[in-house]
Amino acid sequence: MIKVRATGAALGAEIMGVDFSQDLDDATFNQIADLWQQYEVVFFRDQKLTPAQHVAFSRRFGELELHVRKDCCRPGYHELFVVSNIIVDGKPIGSQDAGLFWHSDLCYLKVPSRGSLFYALEVPHDENGKPLGDTKFASSTAAYNALPDSTQQKIAGLKAVQSYKKGYYRERNAGPRKALTPEQEARTPDVEHPIVRTHPLSGKKCLFVNEGYTSRIAGMNGLEGDALLNELITHSTQPEFIYRHSWRVGDFLLWDNCLVQHQAIPDYQLPLRRHMERTTLTGTAPF
Ligand code: SIN
Image 1 (cartoon, rainbow, N blue to C red):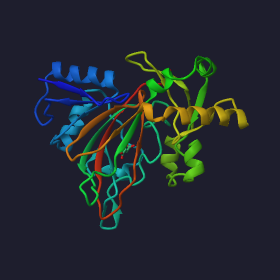
Image 2 (cartoon, rainbow, N blue to C red):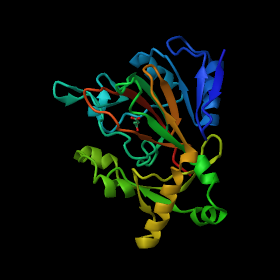
Image 3 (cartoon, protein in one colour):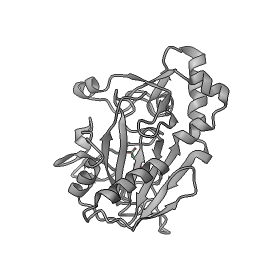
Image 4 (cartoon, protein in one colour):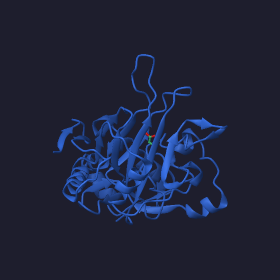
């Protein structure tokens, strides 16, 4: 019997009464899918998922992405992108810099991801037992709805350039990303997506720009474009649109990459260990 507890923020709900180590019937699966649409982020506590169960449940939503950085995926599971600060035999076991800037997963691809399913295997804590390494989620629907009418009209029909190599803020605050191999580079040319994106399932309108990967407004160079992008990016992550998730080992959390952008908080370092694994659902071309 499923129970739902909304976080009280603009988005997010905990779903109780589901055990992902057991088979889930279609009715329960459909209920989870509906709640995910409604709350934009949903999470389940105390789950014990094997990598194969994580992948199999994710596949019920559709095709999975094989991340361009295969070196960051779990050995034997190209579908599982590892986000971790752990180093084994001198080699990072996953991506150490994932999500430090606000972003939406794979928004820099022609077909961005539909959603991501994130499982917490190891969570760092401070000396008082407080979890570290939270993730913040901002509702892109709440951000769009809160824009003044004049701004909604101004951005209707405009596109923004999304770039794996440089985002407007990332470029200014952290410089370009780790260099890509020529093959990875060929898979990630800059792309243009609508600034106001329509969710393919619900038809909700979402503000689809972020500081991590959006580099400029297409066709609007110079100060005017920079000022508009700056305004939209600053607006989109105001506290009233945010839910901040404090992780516990065994948390399984689903976010929608059209309805939500997210950011990881790097307030810990080794020997405190963080190990998370993510499947990433293939999406559809934005409109
Ligand atoms: C990500 O953006 O996939 C990583 C988020 C996190 O580490 O909290």
